[in-house]
Image 1: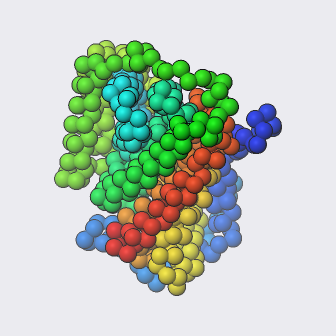
Image 2: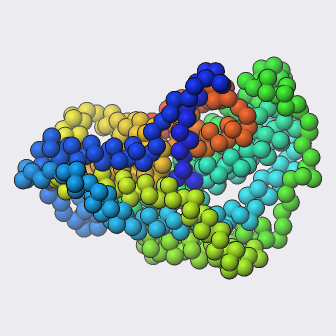
Image 3: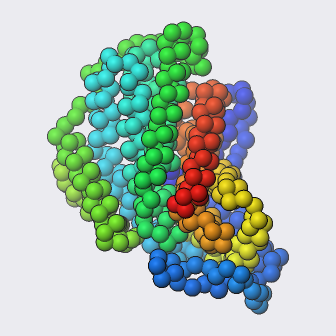
Length: 476
């Protein structure tokens, strides 16, 4: 899950050179709270009139209704209370994240994902390049369902071992695991940590608009597969063409022992069946019964308990795994509350609508495709500073939603611009725990990975830009 991508160091050209220390994400968020408080002194206070859209039930801003109100600046003394109020206001989302994190730890602890990857590796061991799209697809499922992100580093050794056994290198093995999860997370078909949170803030049905996200997923998988295959073929033909040639000479090319990889057990099959059936029920509940945060949290809690018992866990084992998962995700859960503090400060100072109105006036006369591209690249830039998917949604969507209403961009398109801007750059940011953890496991240097990945990143960014324009044209 992308909720903890806080590797705070950026490597430079020489491995033994000094490190540039990045501010902690909490420090960045709290700095933004202070900036928000300063804006309540600098910007004129104002508000839009809002009405309920009877067809959708959403609360929308009224065009040309912006008007000034009495100034109400937020002082330094008010900031701690605003942060606490933000945590209280975001309590349903915060506890939803805790519960989902705990449940996914129960599922992950069963070893099902590792066993599936090993089974696929054994089955397709002699089918060469076919293993690349298969591994990408498997880990994309983890990305677009359970929000697999930093956890992917645990599976990188399997990918590398199989890649080397087939005559490829560590970059190939790392890419076919990590980029699969990244593509799935970005497409976010059923990802509760990016699409789910953003859509709840935008007041649109959770996981709606899945058809376009499915198309994006397929295209990203195809492009990524072809890119890795092209590189892998080049390395197999001439090992000296490997970006990590020196590493490969040090590590050797011993064929991995398939016996050492975990085998599928009955409990793994039961876990797979239960999770698939559970997500089918999830889609039905969201689309037919209008499930929201509370119902979804209850669903995931029940799913985790069932998977635990099917895996022959006792109640105490289930509880301990749940606590471990919730503990690991504390970073991301609290970011949502802290980011909500920014909104609370802007709302108390009556300047959030002033910010939205100013942005709307800036882009109102620009072509529509420029407006949505601006939203997309804004989210991409913000992702450099706020690397938590949920934190970025909580920080930016309260501004992007009313802005999209004013410039006649659908809220679904605003969510799409957020999720693509949030996800596509994760595999190059040195603040990404998924990236830096995977590189640490694989022993690949950051600059070596950048050399491999940057052409693919450009392709991804162009694909993302294309789809936000398409979404705007079709009023997605």
